[in-house]
Image (cartoon, rainbow, N blue to C red; front, top):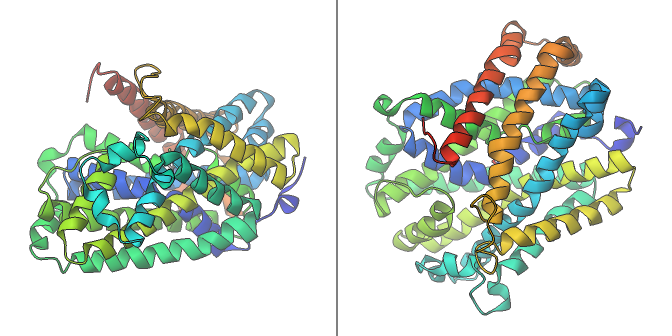
Length: 455
Ligand code: PFF
């Protein structure tokens, strides 16, 4: 079996942190977090989210990174190292990025299209109420108005970075894109603060409304947390396997979680108050917020087209580093399992993205009538990974590490590179708190999806 040294590695702590944070900071921070924060009581949600991230989120992330670094392998082989019969869990994890990366590239393609439109001065077209629907349903005539073209361009861009390898591709791009994203994000936030009447919008976003606080707030925050931190999809195991032994796992995990949370918070700051001022309270959920509401906001605000261009550029950077991490995880699985060369694995990964992604890409237009358990392709792929497979993987990982392999496996790896400050509560988190909450997320997600019961 290939060992870590021959598989490539990050150059050091900064490289690892920026790549992992780049993975975590994604579209989830931009369109999912602001909407959830608004729905679940503003500041009350922010406080709940923060508490959960520094306990639960960090514990899960540490566990995945440690499994990767200790075994020096990607998910299937890493779980095989834990015991022959756990290979199946590795396989389930391996399927997750393979399902997610194609549809993530479809959404990445939409973002790229919007970015190019704003940059070429055509932003007003996007604010026309029917544009998003017409574009995603492939109803527009021009070649560059087809979602398929943008999906293909975006997929090639993502896999091309992975083809350059861990340090020269993934790490180098993350070192450019993530800082650039932060600068653009802070820039827009500062600009938003100068908009007339923004104080009311800010109050709406920031003042805690504990009247709205319920079990739903906690479950909503928990679900968002493991989506946003790129947990339970093999990414942190893979990135851990590229991490040098002298890098402090715990400190790195805190830094990654903190960066991800800051970006989520700032995204809310950039989006929620402006929507409240220009459109009114009550954010739309899902894609509508980013692709329909935001263009309307940019249309109404001074210098809106410039802000729009910057907004979609930063969204593209956020999406790009995430899809790179998903593609790298898929490629590392092909490489480790079948000993393929990186170039072969990249070609296979691109072929898979194109074959599977086209279904999602057309699921709002020509394939709109094809339904799996009542959902279109994109919605189904998102549901089956985020609401079913990922919670199951998280529960199984906790059970294996907590009860079978024992937490010493993780603790020893972390103590190789520093003091493990969370140690006193780590066992309780991994053996009890995490699996119980994950089970609650799984059950409540399934029940509410099928409209049986909503907490
Ligand atoms: N953590 C990233 C995001 O928040 O967008 C990446 C990601 C998470 C991609 C979950 C896909 C996914 F289902």
